[in-house]
Length: 213
Length: 213
Image (cartoon, rainbow over the protein chains, first blue to last red):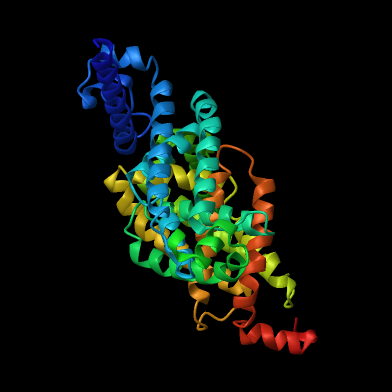
């Protein structure tokens, strides 16, 4: 009975540190990021911070996983609300192409750029990003409601995620919302013919029997 | 007769400084970039460097323009070699989607990310990047040989360039060549039907009269 609240406190501390890490990296970049700075922002003692995360690399690893998980949970929740008919693709493309327009992507960019000249950070990031990327791919397939065994579908899902990151870059220094909206509409229109024939059977079943939706 | 070689020397010095700036930013990031560091790499005295570029922002502005110009000149030269038939789109898409896979994009990324937390750098970069971006768009239209007045073409050209930058990001920490190749092939396949009806008249004329190619 005593251990539970302790574990909870520990979880809360970790979460605070991880969220503070994302904010700090986004605002100060990798050079300005230290465990001490993050601890102060999180309102956690430096000792406690170092108990949870001995190095800033450990904190970054937890931060990347945290951001990845938030995105996946959010997308899954929204995937459940998507219609199964023709309008699904545009709605799904809209979600995916807006995925990287916020402060979390800015923090990720800081890390990627720093890692391009920092071997230790690169060694931490590359396997993590590969895992987060695979998850993002999987959830995008679910969102679109397509079957990847159809030729070309896999590459188009990948291209959609790469485009999303390119649009994230275009939104870094100026507000690119208006232009992005037009690209979303056109991207969905162009993808539709290829993806429509690759609808997953699960979605097809839902179409046949609307009660399952 | 005396002024000519002096002007030439001056041009050479400027070019050396600008090239050294691109390398320095790509390797050391914005934080590690000073006029002194760039001057040393360029083999130019600090005084001469500061005569040409009083601040590192001035050097960066020249570097961004230099990189943009190199890309445009290179693409224009290669555009002239493209066939006018069906294979043009795949070849052109291949060129554009490989545009940001090298060290120049890495330098640009360093600058963009730094500018997201540095107002002075942002003020220098935003108008420059807008100009370079417009030029890249124009030359991509030429490469693809399409007419932008057709509905949807403008957005697809933009999407192709945004996708190219997303692929540049994906190539930052690991070699993404193989995956990118498959995306190029599939994106060209998807673009083809929309762009084929939007062929510019210039290219059409070349098709009708092969001697003009």
